Length: 312
Image (cartoon, rainbow, N blue to C red; front, side, top):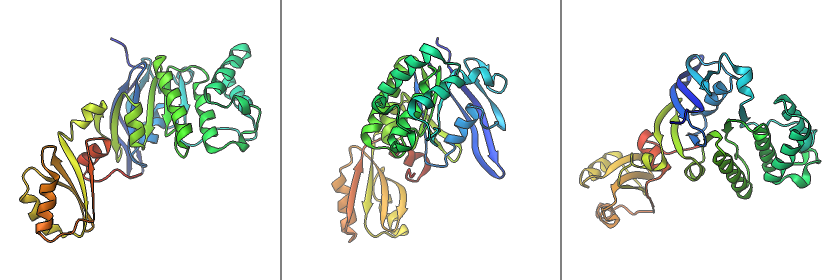
């Protein structure tokens, strides 16, 4: 059985009275893209910062290639690639010079460094602008160069913290293809994002994180089973809480997930006719202003786990 590249066990981190990370544990195997999914403020970046030793953990253990992070930081940094949420580039330098600087920190030089520079600039589509100052790059170009720097020394573990924030769909597609190719080479990848669709497309396994805690973990299909064979209905109109509770009690196996005076969210069995629900609403004199029907996905899993909708 293949040993995990990254093992995180019972990790805790507090900032004064704020518990940013609470008892977080997971493993990432070679060639696996493990997604840490959650809204902004969920604790994803704090977890990443502890793994790459930028922050000390209050409690818990982190090992990479069977070595504790706390006692082998310098050697482990040589085996980690980090792509932070905040772009880390020298904007007065061009792409080649940025790669040379960071490559030197990883011990690369000479023909090996030049070969990797050429290879990665081609992969991220920046070969034609390699000698242009980074200050002239678009946000998407900077994100792609940041990814190239993280891959430069061919790491065993790649930590990607919201790497596609604020970039256009074409650049995002290109980056996701490159990340998949890296995993296919055997690199273990920890990928944090608050984009549900991105996580569904890219990740082999996922952990849903909120308020510093892991709420669920597994493959996409395993997480979707938490919702069961049910649809999610968002119904817009004008609602009273007591009236809604009485109404739901008349509908067999219908669950109220969220309530708002202008919208209710229901969980209903797949075999229940939507028309039956609308008929009951109309019989009570309610005019439905809009109706949105969703099959099980990560959005509905988050809603099921937290009782609220996923928001950035």
